[in-house]
Amino acid sequence: MSKEFEIAREFEVDATPDQVWDAFTSGTGGWLWPLDPPEPRVGGKGPFGSEVVTWDPPHRYTNRVEDVEGISEQTVNQLDYTVEPRDGGRRAWVRYVHSGIFVDDWDNQYDGAAKHTDFYMHTLREYLTGFAARPAAFATFDGPDASKASGAFSVVGRALGLADDAAAGARVRVQGPDGQQFDAVLDYRDPYFIGLRTDDALIRFFGRNHWGAPVGISVHDFAPDADAERNETAWQGWLDHAFTA
Image (cartoon, rainbow, N blue to C red):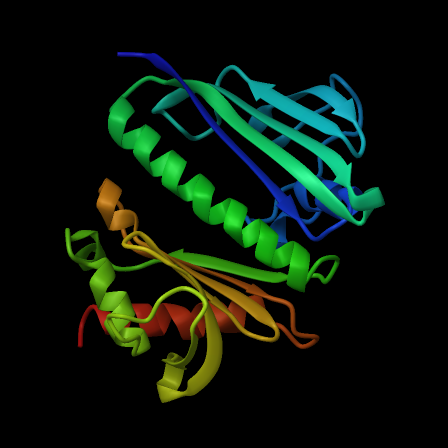
C-alpha cells in the first residue's frame, strides 16, 4: 500500500555555507555518488528526472519528481536542503529532508532509507571537513549473491581484519586488496555500515544484505593519481574473495 514518508536530519559542520552548497549541487561524487549538477533555476532539471522547485544559493535547494526513474518501489521523491551560516559564516547549520511516497514494502524501504541517510550525512561531514573541493575518483559495486545472506556483513569486518570491539574513532590497520595492509581511521561502524578514512580516500562498506540486497562498497579517492577503474577492480576482487574464501 502506498504511504508517505519523511526522513529529516539536522547538524552543524565546520564548513562554510558555500562549501556545503557546492557539496550538495556539484560535489556529490565526494560523499554520495556523482550526479549532474541541477540547472540553477526554479523549473530547471534536477537528478533522477526531478524538477528544481526551490533555488536560493547558498541557502535553500529543493528538487521533486513524481515518477522516480528506475525505482519501482517509489513514486514521489523530494529532496530539500537548507543551509544557514554559523559563527560569522565559518561554520554551517544544515537541514536535509528526504520525503515522498513508497508504494511497496514500506517498512523495509523506510528503514533502509533512514539508515542510509545517517551514513551518507556522516560521509558528507567527513568530506566537508577533510576533502572539500578536492575532485574525487568514484567507484561503487556490489558483492556476489552470497553477500545477500542474513549474516553477510560480518564477513566484511573479518576480511578487513577489524576486531569485534573496534569502534568508530579508532585508528586501525586494515587488510586491503592484493594482500596489502594500510592504516585508516574507522570513522563509522554499526551493524549496517563501516566507514574508513585515509589521508586520500573515504572507503564505505554497505551492509545492504539487511534489506535483501548484496553487500556493497563505494570508494571516494581524492589522491592526485586516483583511478576509479583501478579501485573498482582491486576492491571488487577483495569483496568477491571475502565471500569465496
